[in-house]
Length: 99
Length: 151
Image 1 (tube, rainbow over the protein chains, first blue to last red):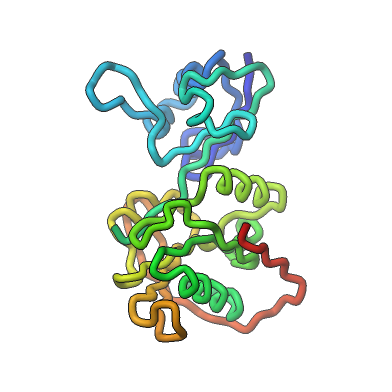
Image 2: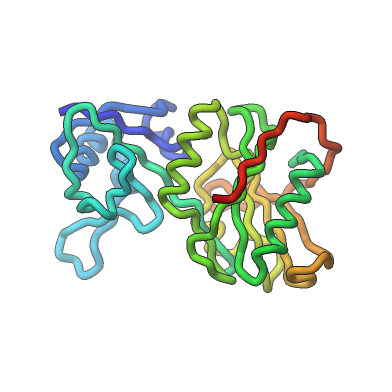
């Protein structure tokens, strides 16, 4: 199942400057694996190993991913299901501060 | 160098003063590739904190969709420090993800909410490297600006 993945400026070094690429998979996790096979290195920028070393990964704290405009943190995270024609948007958080 | 119109500069400072002692944040969007900060977009600090700021994830999505539709990019990303100098913290540097943006920092540590002195400084932050740049404040040139209210 093909989905469109919108890539933020900072990650376009992995996509030859493309703003959007196509991905395949039934879940966000599978889409990210598929992205990684076509754009090596990108996965590491999106997910990190869960503390505790059980081999599971989570979305990085300061990376936002939306499937059809819904923040995946509220729809199952990396297990969020995706369907043909869905749009996945990746946006790094805009955050910082004196601390 | 950052070249910014007087009224946008003043709007950023006013936002920082208004939200003091919490950090204020926002962007100034401009046509992609133009390096012209034209559209002032104050954002809500979802962290409501004196030491941290973060755009709300849904506000962030709306903002980027809007910029996309208009052929814009965030030319300036601004936030305030309310007890320390207007220099990027380690957190600011680690989380800076817009390599093309001017990162503006305003410090309200002296004046607080009042019209006291503020520091207004600008930086490039790329791959963890901070480079300060000059700020040139120029007279407003356009009449049809559409400032977006904070929502």
